[in-house]
Amino acid sequence: MEENSFKASVVMMILSGRTEKAISLLSDFYKIKAPMIRVGHVKGKKRALGVYVAKENTIYFARSENLTDPFVVLHEFYHHLRNRGGEHKGNEKLANKFAISYIKSFMSVS
Figure 1: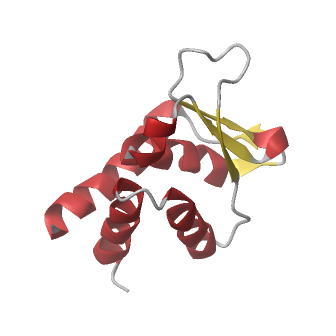
Figure 2: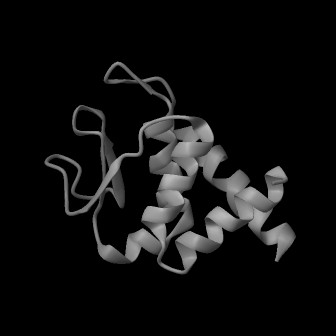
């Protein structure tokens, strides 16, 4: 599958509420273990829409509505992707860039 088509299909899955399937597809594509997904706040991060907790291999979303927000889902997946040995290797700017690249692909294909 061509890169733009792949990225667009991931965004479409998220928008249609199939976030777990999108995360699974992304994990397979990047050859990493898929993170668990939970709805709820992480202590000390109440204002965040999403948080990746490396020790738990879990992405927490503040509200269930955030599960269908491609930017939030892809941003947090990037943190999971860049995690090495419990340590984040990516930063917020790069996580934003990653998410935006998927959204731009979706917009160019649709």
